[in-house]
Image (cartoon, rainbow, N blue to C red; front, side, top):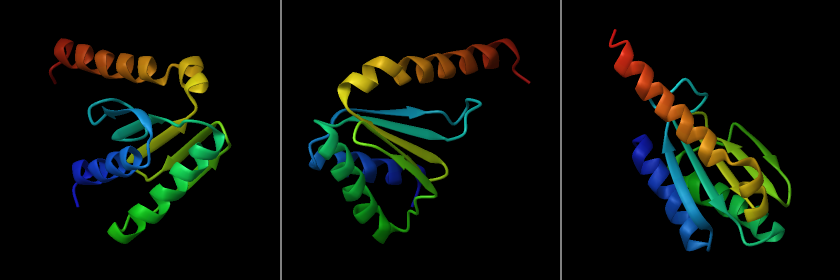
Length: 118
C-alpha cells in the first residue's frame, strides 16, 4: 500500500466517524520526522479517544502499526512512522496552530530548494 493510499484510509475513517476540518500535510521534501501529517478536530474529549480507537481498529487489517501514541481527552498523537496523526478538540488546535507551523515548514523547504538546486 502506498503512503497516499494509507493516508486516504486514515482520512476516510476520520471522516466516517465525524471528525471535522481534516487536513493532510505532505512533508516529503521538508526536514521533519514524518512524510505526512494528518490533523483533525474531534467534537469533544470522548470523541477524541473514540476516533483514535476507530483508527487503530480500521488500520490494523491493512498492516499499519502504531509505533507510539500519546492520548488525552483533548489531544491524541499517533505515530505510524512515516505518518503522524493529530486528533484534537478545536480549542487545542487553535491554541497550538500546527497548520501554521507545518505550512511554514513546507514553504521554507520549497524556498530553500529554489535557492540551492543541488
